[in-house]
Amino acid sequence: MAVKIWNELKSLVSLRSLRARIFIIILVVGIVPGVLLRYGILDNYEERAVENRISTVQNQLMIVGNHLISNNYFNSAKTEAGVINAELEMISNLYEGRVMIINSGLKVVKDTYGISEGKTIISEEVIKCLRGESMSHYDRDHGYIEMTTPIVDTGNVDSPVVGVMLTSISNEAIVSTMDILNRKAVILENLILIGIVAFAILMSDMLTRPFNKVTNAINDVKAGYTDESISVPDYVETVHIVDAFNQMLKRMKAQDDSRQEFVANVSHELKTPMTSIKVLADSLLAQEDAPAELYREFMEDIVSEIDRENQIITDLLALVKMDKKVQEMNIVSLNINDLTELILKRLRPIARKKDVEVVFESMRPVVAEVDEVKLTLIMTNLVENAIKYNKEHGWVKVVLDADHQFFTFTVSDSGLGIPEESLAHIYERFYRVDKSHSREIGGTGLGLAITKNAVLMHRGSITVTSVEGEGSSFTVKIPLTYISGNNNQTA
Image 1: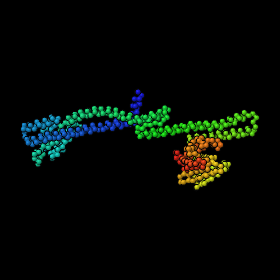
Image 2: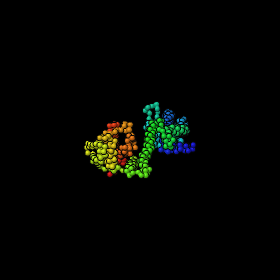
Image 3: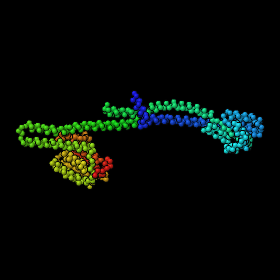
Image 4: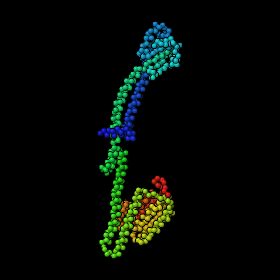
């Protein structure tokens, strides 16, 4: 259990983990809006609270200003201005601030702090207010609100500004309220954070669970517990991953089956000549006075079986080299017409023994970048098969053609043909269409497999059409310009 928890924590810590990324995304999406909302609400509250406080104080100061005008405050004796001064002291105490009355000569008539009375104050805000422009300023850093209020007769539109009330009030009440709101918001945020973390863990686990299913299913296949196709239809992405894996699994099974069949076929093909050689040798040993003619006949059969064994081994080595791609492509620019003529010249004596006519038809001169040895192998195998599996007095037709990208080499015959059900298997190793006559005709059953591999190494293709009893036609299509897998040509 402890190991599982540790693995869960490691998966969440690693940013390469999909689960960790989902967790972080949900966490950020859940927390950031809440934090921004908290600061937005507090800022909005502060702005509105300052506006309300300024508006409230300004209203009260306007009332006091009317009293100043009606009581002729600037010209009356101090004893007669007692009521006004009491109002100013009350406002100063109520808002924990300071009120100064300044006349039109910029002289401080009244200061609730009793510090600046009788002094002259020169301030841009005061001068503007004397011109009828009141102002207010909120200093958050120093914790006060400052405002100017013109002293004017509100009942007379044309009345001049006779003085200014310069007021500074504390914002402590606003700050205290904001602190309370902030603490409550932080508590609420922490509770929401706990909920979001739990939700993020739950959702990240739930959203990545299908991928864990895929991983577990693949691990089961790897461990050998099952070789069946897996299915995880939760997401489109998991379906695509599983489909790709199932295709790979299917291909691996096919390759494994092919490998087992190949081993079985190799064992059988290699054992058959050895068995024949042993039978022939045992027969000679069993006859003490066997005539020389019999010895010669048996030895010829033994040599033939050895040659057959050697041919099988040679073909197997060629096929293995092509499978592993250890053979380098020795690419040269070659006249394909001349090469075809040379190959047909070598094979015509074999054709004459079966009274098979070999015809070559060249549509145009063809020069291509090819591996001469492998192309010779391709052409030789196809033409030789067409001769071997032909009827007496039959024909083999070779056609060479090209366009601006590829050249084609087509070998048609009037032979036995290939059954339709066998066409998909003719390139398999050791596959023979007619097993009963394979010994008579000869060959190892590897020719077409080697041919196809050589064609693929040229980045070409091979196709076949056939009608049983009428003949077959193989077409090889190879690029005129060779392009290797790493874009390097080997000269």
